[in-house]
Length: 140
Image (cartoon, rainbow, N blue to C red; front, side, top):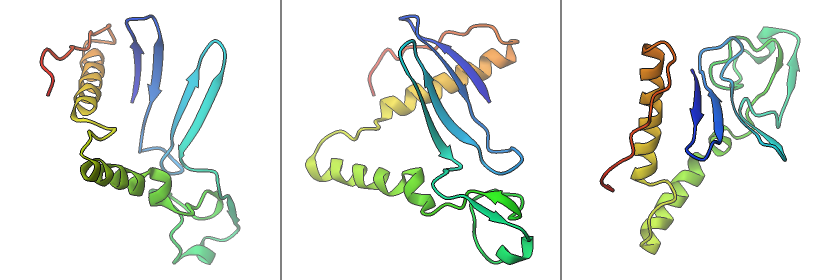
C-alpha cells in the first residue's frame, strides 16, 4: 500500500506498507524534512544479521516472521515482541488505568487512522484523485 497525505499546513507524508514481499516483512518509517532525515526500520530490524550457508542448519530455528528461506543473509529478531512494541503497549495501557489518565494511543487516534486509511482506499478506487479526510464532528 502506498498513500500520499497532504496536511492543511502544506506538510506532506508518503507512506508505504506491505506484508507480502519476497524476503519477509518489510516495514519502515522515514521522515524527510528540509533540515533532517530520519529512518526507523520497524521490520526487519537490523540489530542482528546472520549468514547461513545451508538451509538445513537452521531448519528448527525461528528466525523471524514470514521469511521464505533461512539460507543466505537474514535478520533474526533478538526479541521480536519487544521490537514491535507489544510489551510497551500493554505497559502504557495498564499504567494509564492505574494512574487514571488517558492512554497515549486514544480512540480518537484510532478513528483518525482508520479515516486516513479509508480515504486512501477511496482515492485508489477513484484512480488516485485527492480525497479529503473527514474531520470528526463529535469527540468520542
